[in-house]
Amino acid sequence: MTQSLREQMLQAGLVTEEQVKQVEQAKTSGNRPGERRAPRKGKSGQPGKSGTQDRGRRQGRRPSTASKPAPAPRPPATPSAEARALKQQLRQLVAAHRLNSETADLPYHFQVGKTIKHLYVTAQQQADLAAGRLCIAFLDGRRNLLPVEQGQAILRLDPSRTVIFPGHDAPDPSSGP
Image (tube, rainbow, N blue to C red):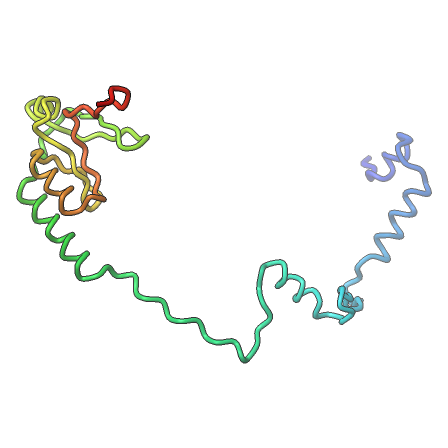
């Protein structure tokens, strides 16, 4: 009822008897479970080891030697005392003047670099942002709504901080002095 694929290919004329015999011989003389192969010889002529040496060379490893000096210990990734004090000062400034409202329901969209971000504000806050009386400062992964004076104070303390002043138009570079 069912024929093997080999017989079907023979009947269709896709293979010859010779080709079938060659495939059968290749299968039987292939990899027998009890048979061991001789270790391969690499470029260096040493059996066995060459595979691991080549692999190490390809991955950029160096051969280990006993005279190799130990790498110098890395300094800890903790920030310095000055950096911690500055961050704490910024946190206190933001906490004292933060105007974010939990009941805000209007999304205010603004651009940071090439990405568009948003912050939920009230109608009054939206008007103040448009008028330039409020700014948005980033600290500890949060967007904080602050008066412009506090945003400028943050930039004076740490110029690397991101503070957005939406109501202030950026100076046009084409209209030079």
